[in-house]
Image (cartoon, rainbow, N blue to C red):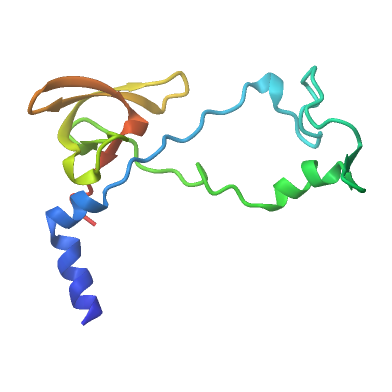
Length: 146
């Protein structure tokens, strides 16, 4: 029964519209002056953002490695996987944070504007009320095929 419901929901356009979410574009690369292999973070920065080697919290002392090494153990979930960029002709929803998803406007991408890194950062979309320019992070692609 469950596979049948999933199959029907996958083909339902209303279900796809309700499930559409905005995708954040992949973060641009760091400038070459800030990247160095096998060196600690912020080596090429003039400000020590980590503070002293030992930090006193209440009656205990915490070592600096908690702020340097521990975050590297946690995998980075955002911007890890490449997604297909928005292109002309894509059907999208215009994300409005102040409104529920079922009232977001539908639109078609008319033109894309890539950033300096070549990734799409801005799109021009056509809605029933006119043409708008929006950030690529503020539109959600409606998948037309699986």
